[in-house]
Length: 585
View 1 (tube, rainbow, N blue to C red):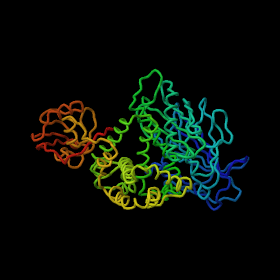
View 2: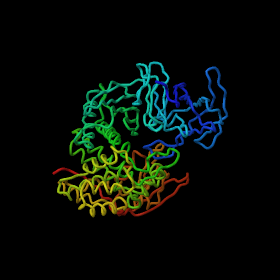
View 3: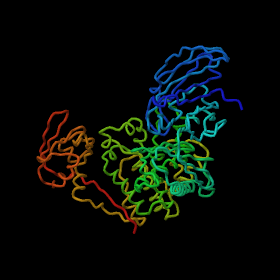
View 4: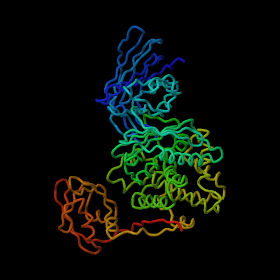
C-alpha cells in the first residue's frame, strides 16, 4: 500500500549522547507556508512541559529524487516553526535532533541499554494535516527490538520498519519502547495482553505475573461490561521500565507506560517486597481502568485535546479519583489481596487526606481545574492550600458507593453508575460535559436519589466538607476505630512537619497549618540544630521527640539562610487530627 503523505522516521542515532534523529516528510505542504508545531504537553499529565526545549537542531529541505535544497525556517514561538512558500508539488523533509534522557513515562529516553519515546516528544505536528493518516518508521538498532501497539505496515521480525496511525492524535497515543525485553503474555476475557519489562536484573516470575494480571484485567473488563465481558481493544500492552527507585504510569488507549522499583517485581532468586508488589499491581490496575475512564470516557473539554495550551476541566476528581478508588477495589475483587489488606489501603488514603489542611480550603472541583498550576506544580505550601483530586476523589467514590448502597438498600452500587457512564460516553465517545455526571447518576440510581446526590455534590465535591465515612462504613458492617498510635507517633503528628535529610541535618520541607512546628516559628528550608539542648539529626529526631511531653517548655535552635534562630514555647496540642483504622466484623 502507498505510504501516507505525512511520514516520520525515528533513528536512535546517538546512544551515548542520548539523541534521536527524526525526519518528517511532508508530501503536500501548504504552498503559502507550512506551519509545524511541537506539543507543549501530553494527555494524562496536566502540566505545560514545553517538549520543544529538547530540540537541539532543526532544518528543512525541499527534496526531489536527485537533489535537496535547504529551506529557511521561521521561528514563530517556542513551539512553532513556519516553512517558506513553495510550489504545490514540492516534497519537504524536516530534520530534527532531539535530546532524550528523561526516565519518566511522559517524554523520551535513550542510552546504550534502552530507548523509549512518546511521539509527542519527537514528532512535530503538521498544521492543517493532523487529521490525515500518518506513518512512523523506526530505524533498526543492533540486536534491539520494538514494542508498541501501533499498527504494523511493513516491519522485520524485531519490529523495526513502518507503522501506521489513522491521524496525528492517534500516533501520539502509542508510546514506543526499544531494547531487550522480558515478556509476559496472557489472555483476559479472550483478549491478548502482554507485559514487556526492561531493567530487571534477574528473570521475572512470568507465571505469577500472568496469573495476577489476568485476574485483575478480567475483573476490570467485567466491571464495565458485566454482560458481554468484552474489552474495547484488540490487544493491550504494559510497557514496564524497572529502575532502582521510581513510580509512575501514563495511560493510553490500548497500552500504558509504567515506571516501577525493580525490587517490587517478582524475580527468580531474589526476595520479593510483597507490599511493593501490591503497589505495582495497584499501578497496573489504575492505568488499565484508564483505558475506559479517560481514554474513552472523556471530559468534553478534552475533545479534541489542544496540546498547545492548558485544557481545563472540573472533573478530574471523577476521572482520576474514581480510577484511584477502583484500582485497589479490583485487587480485592480479583482476590489478589484480602479484605483486611484492602481496608488497610482505604484507611491509609483516608488518614492521608485528613492530615492535609488544604482539604478545608479547596474543593476537589477547584483542585481539578487548578491541576495545571497547583497540583502539578506543588511547592512547600501545597499541603496547606491544595487537596488531591486523586486521594479525596477516591474517598468521594467510596462515599458515593456507600451512600448508594444505603439509599437503595443494597440493590445498586457505584458499579451501576460506571456501567451507564461507559454506555453513554465511552462506547459513543461523546464527551462528558461539566455537569453531565448528574444525569448519569440519576439515570443509574433513580429519581429518588436526586436530593441525596445534589447534597453530596454540594458538600463534598463543590464544597470542602469531610465525608462522614465513619457513619457510612459502619452501616456496611465495617468496624471503624481510632488508629492506635504510640506517644511518639502522636507527638510527630502534632508537630505537623515534613522533613528530609540534608547532609546529616534535618531540613524542614513542609510546615502544616496549626501544628507545633508552625507555632515554634519553623518554615520550609530551615535546618533544625537542637531541641532542648540536644543536637538533632535525622537518625536522632525520633529519640528526642520521644522525650517530649505536652505541657513542657521546649527550646528550639535552627538555621534559616545560614543565620541562627532560637524560639522557646510550650508544647500544646493542636486541633485533633483524626486517624482511623478499619476492620471487618
